Length: 228
Image 1 (spheres, rainbow, N blue to C red):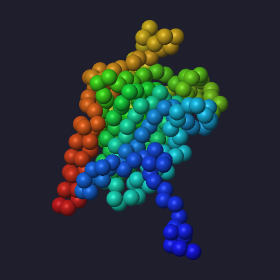
Image 2: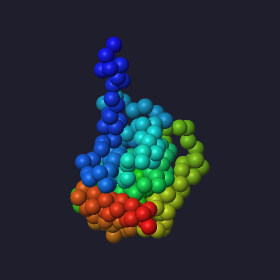
Image 3: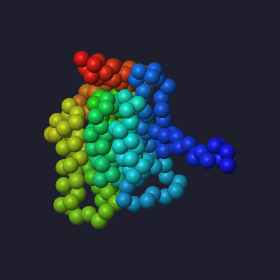
Image 4: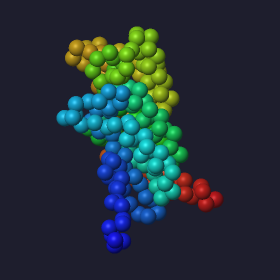
């Protein structure tokens, strides 16, 4: 058999939703996309665009171990989804030792909020929005049997993560969660672009250029510290 026949097919990171960006070799960056609904303990219908946490977490582990990867760009356009799985993704991103920048493009709703603030620095596009609401029994929420006490504890975990990883204080965040009259047949708040920055939820308004500039600067700073 020829060498070509013996070779195993090449598996690209892009096959799993992670794409190598064309940046200088001195600052190789990987892009991680969080799109659609976050699928967790329950499978969503085939026609739903989903981000599967069982795919994302191994990718994050691989990125952490790859010496060629110097930084990670997390791009969000998500409607939210499974709360426990979303928190697992957020904690995994927060645990990466490499510089990481997130950017909300389109939307970073519901459990997408903790994921957006899990990076070292966060951006939101001027037209992008984020929906903040309580953990619910129906809709985009947990996929396991739940009691009221369990839901309250889960909500406390979400609040703690967001307030510990952003500049927004707990009282303000809970107030946004419980706002009445802004969402149709629900409670909560939608914040758009600059408002998310003013609240301390996101660090800066910007797009891909600003996010990449920030990430490359963080990579350069870390490389300089390593050579001192």
